[in-house]
Amino acid sequence: MSDTVRLLRERIDGLPRVRLAHLPTPLDACARVSAQLGPTIWVKRDDCTGLAFGGNKVRQHEFVLADAIAQGADCVIQGSASQSNHSRQLAAAGAKLGLDVFLLPKLDAMSDPVQGNYLVSNLLGASIEPIGMQESTKLRKEELAAKLLAQGRRPYVVGMGATRSLVLATVAYVAALLEIVDALGPDNPPDWIFTTSQGSTQAGLQLGCEALGLSTKIVGINPLDARHEAYQQPEEIAGFARGAAQLLGVTTAITAADIVNSTDYVGESYGVPSEAGIAAMRTLAAAEGILLDPIYSGKGFAGLIDFCRRGVVEPGDRVVFLHTGGLPALFSYAADLVPAR
Image 1 (cartoon, one colour):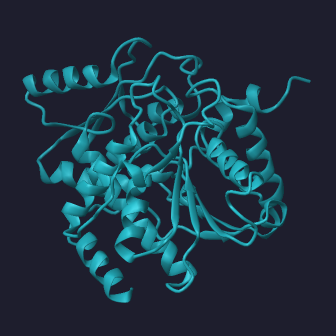
Image 2: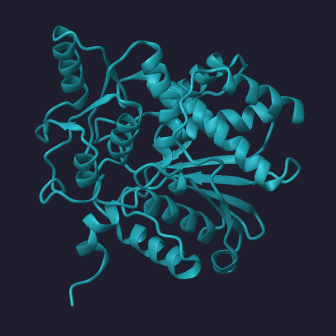
Image 3: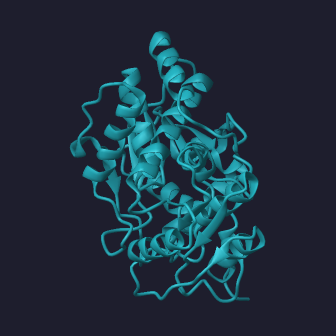
């Protein structure tokens, strides 16, 4: 395995990259929650990547924004929910790198009052142009890119609909998988890795495990489903892995059949906390002092708890839960998290 690890590192290091994240992130052993649930559980703390409250996108922006700069971009475009973690981390990365950031947040239930991620994005100096709830984010991003081009700007679009950026983001999580292997030891890989993902994060973990010949099972707990414009089918996730493999010069046999990506824990809808997610947040917080968020990582950990209770993940299994961040949203959802008194 050591030769393959070395090769992957060399290929990753050969790609354009800007340094934004505090890496490697910690891998916290969680003895108390392990005793409650049965398996041996670690939390990979990608909420600790730094840069405006951290999160998994900081790691990904190292490759995505390096590509934007290499292409001569002077601004970047993203659109999502008003409480988007991606947008907040992009705004911070753009500020650090001197790239203008244009955000197209939805005028959704969490856009007024301005707080949480939306507040942070404003403070970071992003140009914010809200769009209606029923508008297509992909289409509006394309329109804004065309408008900026006509003004003589050089825009670079990221996120949904921007395949190259999603493939580069996948590379970042091949690197994250190498960090996990380093921390646990090459002879002691986890049996499972759970994360809250519906795209590049899961694809990178999957590709890394395949490249190293690991039998580790990757489970993506999706925060949204096919009702949402950003939803990605397993074939699309597998496609990100294949694209990243091509960039890294490695072979892959990953197909949609290899992608375990569950929408069973979305709850009412994307952006709405679920009872199971809130209970999972309380479980990890009370046992380990680790905070999750109600829209992504809380639902992801709810999925892990359910897999344990149903016996899919068995006592004694070794499990890594990859914490993708999102903590500013805690304050936006206070009324959902703490019952009225």
